[in-house]
View 1 (spheres, rainbow, N blue to C red):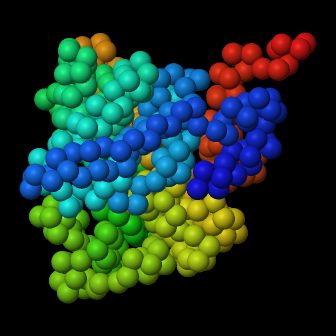
View 2 (cartoon, rainbow, N blue to C red):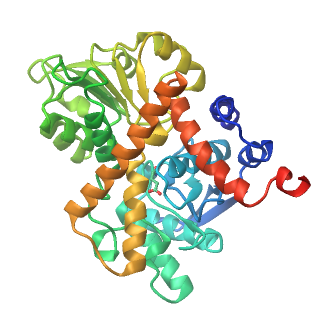
Length: 417
Ligand code: GLU
């Protein structure tokens, strides 16, 4: 996975005159720790879980990135996600490097008390790796504010003082930020709105298909439908639904929040059940992958009918599917830009924790909008300037910031000239 992700770095490097030392530094993670977490289950037995934390690169600041709980989590995936975080933070000009963590577990199989023990065990194992000036975790797939709260509490116990800035995405009552819950989707929404005319979405039909109905998928459905977009298809891990006349988002959220699946809506009105793969190819104008990696690949990329893809998930389009989408004229708003609203509001949370001064929600929305629009605009212009797709433009943008920081430490040229 990491090798494939690195091909995008190589491609961006061909557009810039960066020192080879820069590429050498960015090709490998700085440190990755693998551990086995051992916890007591409710029935008295002990069970162990593989867990990782990768700090990929810290040239631009302390490392930042979420922790995911997923049965298919792996070391390679964690390293790759940490590589993407490095570029995402550089795209947004946040003073951070990139990191990621994971536990190989299906959290739906654990009781709440077991989940708490696992979350605390994670912090105990990685306590010397994380820290408010070193590495700052956050939520990711199948982790949430409650888990971040347990983790912040555990870290505070270990350090013997409250330390809210060690982790972001916390509950508001424990120093979380207003606006963090929907920040990933909201950032993507501001980006789409800013580029609406260029993307041909202004005034035209606005049909949306959303793959994945977790935090990002649910909030983007809500934000877009409130703005007049028509949500024609939604999927979650159990299946997908389709209605060309539009799905009522409030009903979909209610079905999901009750612990069920959006598939429960099939049969209501014109809603029909379809397969997850069919969703990728439904007639729509905007396709929003908001689940996991490699969902659009060489096997299905040619089926995409949308003119625009908004990548709210990390890595939803495999590297070898990029050229297929480009040839078909599909514009991809790439993950390291499109879903960067989450880490941007995490940055706001960290700043507020350190200031001990908390901002209003409208201030947070305004600051997020300003950054999304400014970086989105630069990337749109870079794409035009270099005649390249927006993913490559985003990598060029991030790489030039990373290169400046790495070169400021001194490269071979610096020592031999
Ligand atoms: N897990 C999110 C991401 O992939 C957020 C990371 C953060 O807030 O640090 O961008």
